Image 1 (cartoon, one colour):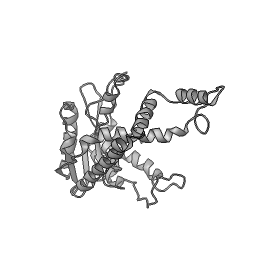
Image 2 (cartoon, one colour):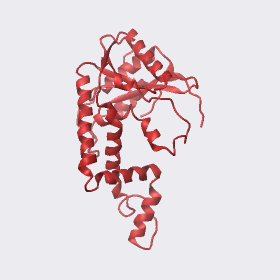
Image 3 (cartoon, rainbow, N blue to C red):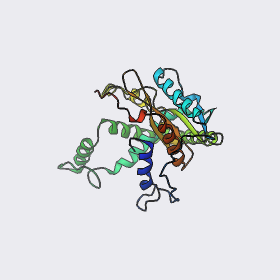
Image 4 (tube, rainbow, N blue to C red):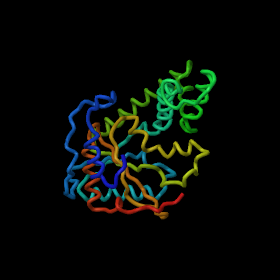
Length: 274
């Protein structure tokens, strides 16, 4: 979800949250009042966790400095800062890129040109399958389907997909234990600012490494909110990520909104370049 401020995100989310009878993945829970957000400028009593695993060697110095400055600003607003550990963070990247392609392979199998998806004309069924799937999916989707099919194949399911699901449980447990000590967790969104469009198009691994800080919360299933906290020397935005316990989006909105009451990073515009 994209918006210009935490308040705008909360307004949109207010209408999206809750149970959808046509969505089997939605939760049948009560929806709190996410808006209006409080107008105060205090975070007194808030406990912010800072995991050491998210400040890694090789991170762009401007990113680390901006995120730490934002945490210090929140501390000035009354929050307390505490070191926490998410020890299985280093496994999130390989785990995600086993689980996500496996699920893509299984879910996208239905798009065969017969039941769902694009259909390309062909003289025989096998050629219809081949042409339709070849034309309907781009390079990255095809790459993930192939990776997932391999991970789910006979002889590899337990060694790859099964093991990845076990580690996913450990990652979720890390967050559960951390949220027993703090209210929210603050981290960078990515280790660097944006690279030029197409710069890593021939290096998928380099692209995947940019996700290293955002994948753990997807695996754990906890809410996260990213917002700008600075710019680098090239006027490219630097993002901070707040993570919270299950169904505590309201807390993330409040913290980000309070921060944005005393800063203007979210109002500034980056340099557009390709």
